[in-house]
Picture 1: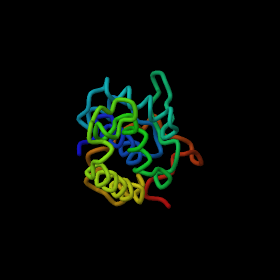
Picture 2: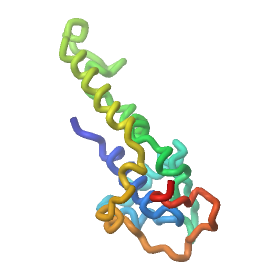
Picture 3: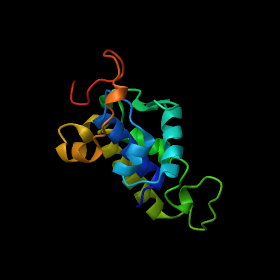
Length: 162
């Protein structure tokens, strides 16, 4: 099994926002810290904002911030949003399935069970689980942005506070 680049980048963006929760982060900073293409990140950021995971602000003082507390973001849900359009195997595709074994294949049943188990594990994880007390991740993704500190009371709750 292999995840799409978009799913991988989506989780990197969310982790960067969670580590820097409380202030806006810039896409360029995330791209550098997460070793990712800014062009790919732009597409992922758009989808994350569309799905309500992050809020974006355009302009010179703009950036990204989590729209929800990290404990409210299910990793399984994020994976489903980003992997939904990509069938695991040809036989999982509703319209493009040309496999002649589809009706009698037992492997498809096993793969379905494996996918359910995979998503079951991810459903039990939140973004907070990925970032809380993870000093190594914080060292890699903490981005300086003292000008963009949000006033208290917004969505800028510290990822460690809960």
